Image (cartoon, rainbow, N blue to C red; front, side):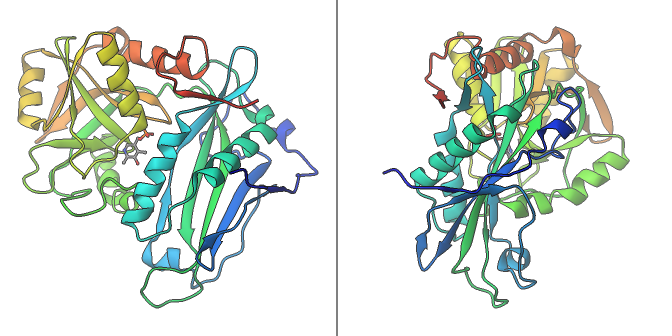
Length: 354
Ligand SMILES: *Cc1c(COP(=O)(O)O)cnc(C)c1O
């Protein structure tokens, strides 16, 4: 079913203010945003408006009780300059998994996809084409009742805005295995992309930064023995450039789309990929014997975030030279080339717009 989206065009594009060679991640926003509201038990058709502030009540329930979820995805241009999305239906699926867990209404496919398509087509001049860059898209949903009692909200807004992002080859990072704080445990909301899961990660990450690390590796909430994920990325460990391990989807970690993409590409290339519980002691032993050849995080923003050093129980374990990593370097290039149409798309991951 096609829905009709009202478009109120921005009379004054800000694109000339954007220096596409030097974009700071998350600070520059394109000319438009999409919004659809849920009222009277139904999603209303959305609107596209100039990007700008929104007005909220001090009692906005999302602020007090945390019904707030989000997605992160990217739009690219193919070699002919046509805009395209990467696996957008996977983001919708996950948004609705998050919505259910947080007691929020599911978003219909036509609102999500039409909203994205029309917004990206309208702001396609904002999709950077410098190598490594993309237009980052942030869909999110939050509770909007003007009511301070504790109950699920009756009203919600779903919005999307866009940020051009440059190549984000992050420098290989130092991570600390976290054994005091927990991100999620059985029965909690670790597999939801919920704002609150980020709120609770700020203090542990700040503490790790004070010790000279960039990020933490979360461990399981029962015994702190198994690795879970790191910051905004899922984790991969490669033994002897051959066997690839990644934590299984145990309900406590996020089902990353980049994670799924990397598993599919690795298996198609002939690698053995095991999704299982990964003990931190096993990985540290492998590092000591120089068998741990590559460790990296996967996520939409960076695609691949290489890990240079793992800190565990006060000792630092240095991993092999990031420049020479076989698996992570191959994955980064392959994923980005598929996203930008420079390599064939054997899994049908691309949705062309226009
Ligand atoms: C978004 C996110 C990821 C990565 O998911 P992608 O779909 O690959 O971007 C991993 N972990 C957490 C906690 C996340 O919020």
